[in-house]
Length: 444
Ligand code: ADP
Image 1 (cartoon, rainbow, N blue to C red):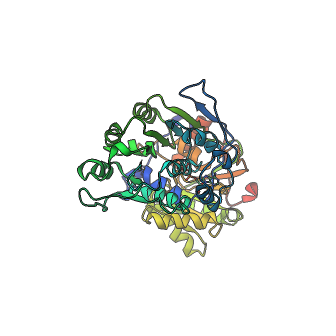
Image 2 (image 1 turned 120 degrees about the horizontal axis):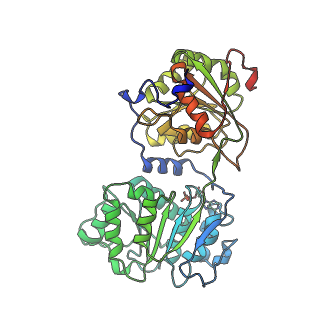
Image 3 (image 1 turned 90 degrees about the vertical axis):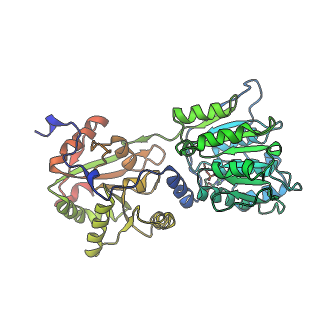
């Protein structure tokens, strides 16, 4: 029987496909998250703080007024629609704005207010009447640098004398030019050039150093070393701030080496659970039959919003074409789209303008669409070896306790691959019920 050989291996290897998905690109995901994020991600966890000096009092602020910011900066914050500090900002801002300045390593998931916090710190430390570089902010890509710069410009919109310059590819002033901007944002390689080769920045005058997206940074060849070289040349009084969305050991090691004896702030990510999710499977012969099964439940899935996951771009494209041919309305989120197009597709889905989104793993990774209540695995998630990928399964259909609305997951499984499904049941110690899509009363 299938059960006895539940090795979790797929009989067919989708990864032989020529149109394999592109490698996961952390920086692209990060940018996508920024493009689609319009508000804070909330967390039910408390912020954990590890102070460098545990005897010093720990301040926490519940309002921006308590921070005694310059009125023009406060005005910028309110103009952005911020009413009160986010959870991580409550604890991080008093430390970041303290006198004398304190170093900080902070970790919390994307969308929790890290960028806004360090932008605020840079803006409030800058001496606007002095026109030379005073803050360096390292970011992993050109696009992410510009995103951060936009936040600086927005928050600092009433601080008219504060200027930003970008040390990024394609922007290379001639050697020894005078840079009047106080805040320099850029990628490590270009920043090194600006500092040393082009001598545009007098390192002795830098008072704030920010390293953003440390996890993305260390996954990019050469960036960790380049960041260390920049940091080494900064003066003793310079405030060091490092941020990361995730904190694996490698990030941790890098962070604590770069900024030893730092204050540390962490906000745990909400755990995903399968508790509130009703899970079904429908055994099918082939992808055509899977398509028919999907058509049968189309009426149900469009009552709410649904995401349909496919293993490859090719299948995703085929499926969306078939559905459109049959008069269904679906949106396709594919790796072939530019990042702006992807952001637009996700935004339309979020706004409820599209009810069904077809996508692949890579595209959807890192994107949380809280209102989705139905997930269809047109293909079960596999890793590169063709083994079942339980973690991705959890990410696709799991919910956080907070957003613990009831969810529905339907797995369309080729009969010869049922062992994959059994591997999921075993891993999570759950039972996935068989669904008869010709008789769908069960899920209504
Ligand atoms: P992160 O850097 O952790 O990804 P951001 O600083 O980019 O988070 O913030 C995520 C979103 O929340 C942005 O749209 C930002 O404008 C908004 N935001 C940040 N801080 C606040 C706040 N205190 N109140 C309301 N919105 C905020």
